[in-house]
Length: 391
Image (tube, rainbow, N blue to C red; front, top):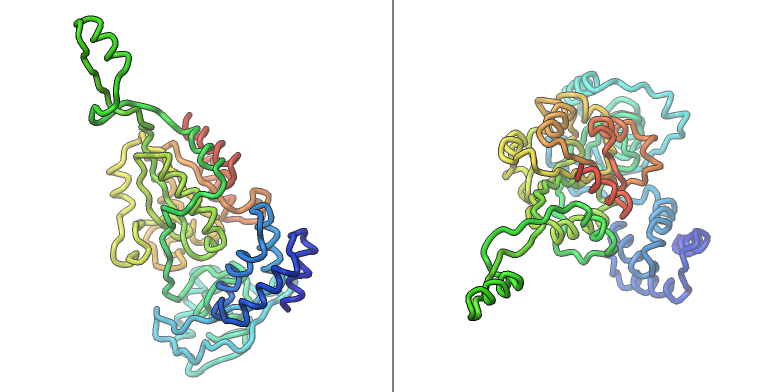
């Protein structure tokens, strides 16, 4: 498999050498990646990719070669569904035609059916189309395949079709001190600026000093506040789930924003905005901030930037209770409309390549809610977003 991986990288025009391949094999011999697919991904990328231009080709090749090779969560923490029901035995992938033949139940029917299954099921099930289990066509369980279901007891998503996730998941804060890769992201952010002199008088006012000294006949030093970018920015960052594939790009943007904007407040959300957000991902269940409170606290002069891949079930946007992680009283669409009304200068920055947006219904819906102000996470896209926030 690893030799095939090397060959596929060469075929994708990623300039890997036999020496680098041997370094990777030696690292595997010493259990450096600790035998998880995530660690192996990071290790192989560090050893085999020498130029950021080849990152996309590497990711595509890695996904194709190691498709379906995942690890399983140690336990299901959200509800008392027995672990033995969910142990991974086989994984199932359906063809597009087979997926099209499976009927979607709709959100309300799906949740009602899940309640019935929990009440009726007495044992573990494998490979079927009805019960909570693994490797089948049932809409409930892990490592099977269904165009619309509830994911239970699976380490990570595979096809992005789950409309609810039963497991408690832990997210990681973006590193604000992450070394910025492409310097041009920071340059693009400079399009959004409005300078003002505020605060303590600490900077030498050379013109004022010369003028006052000439008037008074003796040296009269004048100071003035430092000239700073006075733009006020609210940054909302999607974290976890499918955003795991875009962590580095999001961290680069976050780092650049913290350097560029002195008046920056940031909050995290997952997939779509709802009634609360949080500042610390390790304590996101205990320490949350009301979205309504933010709307009432920050004025209309704030510029608002959402960063997320916009890939989710449409139910997460339009349906109360549609969130994958909790039963939200009001729809995500309701909260997005409130936010864009409160802060008219709002944009959504999407790390997914723009040419793929038309294939995602949720992406098109969010773009429409933002009045078409959705831009790619590229230097050109960020520059366009900053121009939109300026007007």
